[in-house]
Amino acid sequence: MHELGLTKELVDLVAAKAAAAGARRIVSVRLAIGAMSGVEADAVSFCFSVVAKDTIAEGARLDIERIPLTLRCRGCGVTAPVENIFTVCAKCGSTEVEVTAGREFTIKSMEVD
Image (cartoon, rainbow, N blue to C red; front, top):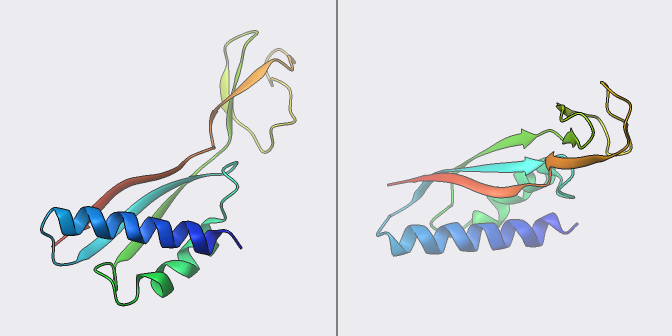
């Protein structure tokens, strides 16, 4: 489960940024996790309170925005969410598509005291 290591790095990063800003504690952290990022949002959520223990992030709320996989057709220009990358354009049937969203693993914001 690589999410444990990712979550530890996440907590280390937000804790360092919050401390550098003079914060006493982190109230919340908001993440964006894409459907094709290779990161299980539920596992990150599970690990967060464990790795945040005894840090400035202990007790912080973790909000996760799940970003769907979205493709753009190079043929007709349509952009649409899809279930998987192995699909054709719903409008023109082209297989020439590119990922425009769904690979994210991003810290969107954090609230501190």
